[in-house]
Amino acid sequence: MSLTREEYKKHKECFNWFMEQPKNTEIWVKDVLNVWSLTAQPTWGMTSDYVINDEYYEFRKALVDGRTIQYYVDGFAGWQDTTDFNNPMEGAGNYRIKPEEPNFKVGDWVIETLMNKEKIYQVKELDIKDILAPGYCGDVKLWEPKKDEIVWCWDDNMTKTAHIGKYSSYMQCTNRHRITTDMGCDYYDNIEPFIDKLPTILSKI
Image (cartoon, rainbow, N blue to C red):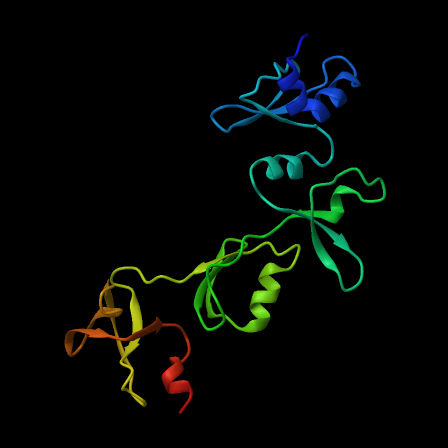
């Protein structure tokens, strides 16, 4: 096995670890198609990425893929960014892949999928904290109405009235929604999902 200086410089940590392991030990490699797989015969080429196959391998792979890794510090510090997996006092359970920042904010309507069940709700401050907390296993995404979905709708100048209709489309240039109600087809400023509660504009009365 031979490596160029450039190859050894790039793969130094993985190469040294691999050479210390028993025969037929496998190491993770990411090929030019960005696919991860295990190999017992690494070529150490410049176009491939390698990570050590230990208890931290999922975090090592995520780091190579451009994700941020965090470890938990007791006290007020909480989750801190890191690239170090060499502290013998910290096991893999103290690490996590940093959650992606949500594309929604307080007040937005979202769909949460948890244990194959969907729930639509309006986000509160506490919801954001729960979603970003370690161990949260739900999938939350911004609610976007589907064509012909039943929705609440109203205009900004309406203070005590909301209509129920079928969603049609969104007019980006005017930031309004095309809805078909029992009064016909028209455009409205605001929409909310039609669930077992009054829309925001009526619940505030």
